[in-house]
Each structure stands twice: as structure tokens, then as C-alpha cells.
Image (cartoon, rainbow, N blue to C red):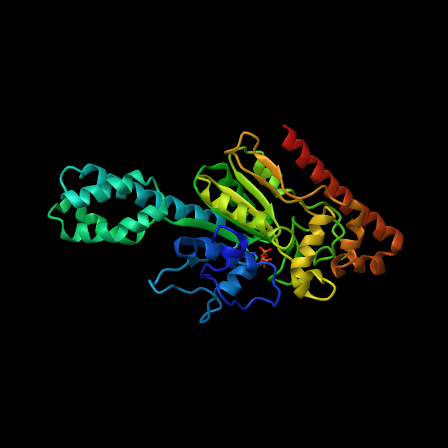
Amino acid sequence: PTTTVKGSQFLRPYFEVSGACPGCGETPYYKLVSQLFGRDMLVANATGCSMIYCSSTPSTPFTNDKNGEGVAWANSLFEDNAEYGFGMAVAQNVKEARILEIMESNLDKVEAPLKKAFEAYVAANGDREIQRTLKDEIVKGVKASKVKEVKELAKFERDLIGKSVWIVGGDGWAYDIGYGGLDHVLANDLDVNILVLDTEVYSNTGGQSSKASQAASIAKFAAGGKPTAKKDLGQIAMAYGHVYVAQIAMGADKNQTLKAIKEAESYKGPSLIIAYSPCVEHGIKGGLSNHQRTQAKAVECGYLALYRYDPRNEKPLTIDSKEPQWDKFQEFLMNETRFNQLTKLKGDEAAQKMFDKTKEDAQKRYKALVERKQD
Ligand SMILES: Cc1ncc(C[n+]2csc(CCOP(=O)(O)OP(=O)(O)O)c2C)c(N)n1
């Protein structure tokens, strides 16, 4: 069954070979989302690595299937990507409303088979799989119909199957530069899916520190190790109450990743997925071929927790990762040059103080999560 992790990998990826760094932590998430929703995806992609590996003209990792269906993708700017995707969703809603209006107001005028198809379409209530089975019949019926009021539907041929709107970008976009727009989209109730590929630095411009960077990590603009904690974007989004929020790390729990992506997409409101994505800038020992294993270690030691917050549930928050093994925290940090070089820079004692802070920050985040679960 394609609902399982193994089965999902028999689905066609609409995102194939990208030009990203070998072992990039971002691309496996993109590929997976494309396997689940690719032919219906409408993507607003922020500037950053994902934009570059998605659109290094004339090559593209995206592909169409034999019906010519595939991902519809565009990039506007670094600073307005959430708003850009929001606009796509607004436009889609307007078209959908017009389609339904035409169908409903002409039910009693059109030929009997077309009436049946219209009724089934309206009753589908946006279910894309049902819409897909009705599309050809409606297109043919509208062409053949004697009722001129339904002819307008012909121009919506490509909108008869609803779209899955995705707003994608890195942490520099989501936590920093595009944050105002992201917050605006979260504060509203449009059905959009936001995927944050969190590398904890601005990867594409060479590893500048962002608000997603952890304390003690060395990055550009934080050459002596970042002094402050990672911003907890998930908690900010959960505070709204109506936003679906998940934190995922594929290498730590593939089932949870799959579940979260599907739940986020099925939620009829704003969804935010924060996807932990190891990057070449982290300087992982042994290189990025270890990126999936590194994600598992990050979750095991409490560097990040896996969770899903689904407003549809009576108890919205589920913490999916096990109680952290905090004694493994330092070992995790020492496996990456962004942390372990601090000892050389600052000396053992000063570096240790900063590493302790990184751990305390993670413990605070975990405690806040447990408290929210108990609320
Ligand atoms: C307003 C603006 N400022 C700066 C840039 C330069 N810029 C392009 S990509 C990028 C970094 C993107 O980082 P992030 O959002 O974390 O995505 P990643 O590359 O890590 O996937 C920057 C600073 C820009 N394009 N626009």
C-alpha cells in the first residue's frame, strides 16, 4: 500500500535529480512531497538553495507524467514568498467558487448526464480524487452542451481538479526575512502548506547565521558562536491554535515524516512543517552521506524534538520522539565543525559554557513542548 513508508516510494516522484550538493538534507523532503501530491502542487518557492536547485535553467528536477501533469512552480522574491503563495491560494479559491457557482446555478438547465456530473462534483466538496474522475466527463459535456451559461467552465479546465498550495523555503526566509509574511499567512485561515527546510543557516549564500541557528554554532555573522537561542517557530505557530504544526526529521522517523506531511496537506487551513535539514555548512564528520543518521542522533539527544500539532484533535499536540537522552547532547555537537571548532576559537572553558547553553536552550524548548501537551 502506498500509504506506508515503503509503499510511498513506489509512487512517481515529480521531483527527480536536482543539482543540490550530494547528500543535501533538503531535497529528500521535496522529493517525498512531490511523490504524494506532485501533479496537483502549486508551489511558491522562496529564494535560497531550493529555488536554485529547482530552477537552474535550462535544467529542472521537475518532471511531468504521461498525461502532462506535474508540479507548477514559481519564485518571486526572498522577502515575499509567503504572500506570493497566499495570493496563489486566494486566486485558486476565487476560481473554485466561480466553478461551483456556474454548476449550481445551471443544474436544472443542462443535459441530464452533465447534471449528474455537476452534482457529483459539488458533492465532492473539493476532494481531488473524485474531481479527477469527473473532469473529462465535465469538459466533454460542457463542450457539447446547448446551454451557453456553462461555456465559461471551459476556461477553468485546468482548475477543475483543485490545487495543493505549497509555500517552500529555508530558515533564512521563514525565520528572518520572510517572517512577517509567514506570520500573516499563519494568522489567516487559507488552506496552504508551508514547508520550512531548516538548515539552521542561510545555506545558499555561504552559511550566514539566521534566527534558526543554535547557540554556540559558528556561522557567518556569528564567528565566535551564536550567543542566543534558536527561535522556536513551532511554538509561535502553535500559539495561534488554528495552525497545523509539525517538526520532522526524516532520518529520525520516516513514519512520522510521512504522517505529518499527509496530515498537513489534508488540514483545511494553514499548515507549517519544520523539516530539519543537515547541510554541508554543518561540517558533519564523515560528510553529508551521514545526513540521515545525523538526524536520528539529533533527535535521540534532544537537539530537536519531533511533534505534530493538529487542531482537529481534542488533544492537539503529540510528541513523537522519545524522552531525550541528554547525556548524548555534547557528543552530537562534537560531531559537527560548526560546534566543535569553538573549542579552538575560545578555549575549552568558554566553549563549554556556550555548549551548556545550547543544551539548556534545547531543554527549555522540550519543557515548553511537554507543558503545551498537558494544557
Ligand atoms: C531581500 C534579499 N536579501 C538577500 C538576498 C540574498 N539571498 C539569496 S538566497 C539567501 C539565503 C537563503 O537562505 P535560507 O532561506 O535559509 O535558504 P537555504 O539557502 O538555506 O535553503 C540570501 C541571503 C535576497 N535574494 N533577497
